[in-house]
Length: 355
Image (cartoon, rainbow, N blue to C red; front, top):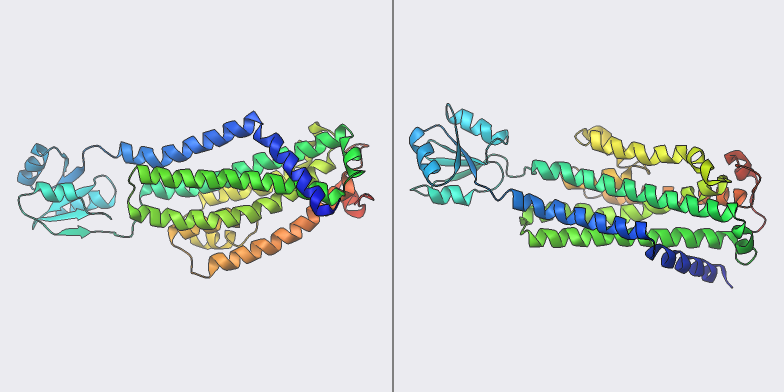
């Protein structure tokens, strides 16, 4: 049996086992529910009365009679400020002129006795809800998927090592084929889960009749997130396999994986808390462990030049190749060492004779 055929056999077995795993099924359903809720609920919840600010008492009374929720303003400048602060959806000022932030309030325009001009104060503004939820969703998906799948890879490797099954496996197939099969299977499953979530999110936006402007903002971010996710996950998956090989028992995984856990967690919190810090986000979008999150978020915010995602993807691909080599070497050097937890230095110096 060739190495490729052996790796394909291992991958097929891992996929079959995973597709029957209740935790995997539950997590997929849960993520799909979140994807639908985050796209449909905002449209449903925003279906209430349009809030309008007006300084003229006569205009305010007419709008109230027409069914709008009116916030009195001391003057036109105050009404405009309420719109800019997001306290109201629109304002009617002297002229009359209708003020809105980024989208024409057709219901307000239609309720006035004359057809007033509409002034958009910030036509390129991103909805505050989207500005929060899209970076959070991208960061959370990469973090939770790479962490949970990665931990499962480590636990699977340690279990095979602890039960001595790995000794039977490596007597039949090369060690690298075993590693490649596990990483390929988990990458395929993780990518399939993320791609399904993306498709359901787009379907949810269509069902909720989300504005095309929103789709044009979210679409490119998700489109770029997928290749960044695959490369980032492959990079981390091999390292998780190496961590599992270093441990001799399931109890050892937590200690052996602490550096890798930090490498996964820190980018997640950095992107969440530093989204508005352009210099820091620019740096994070080229750092291998954070670029799968930071670059799609910057694309969503419109902060990137055309060439930047391509360069960041090349940097991530090169880094993934390096970490694949490191993870594979650690995996091979510690897989058959069953007398206690193996140190990184020992694994690095010693490679399995079965490779």
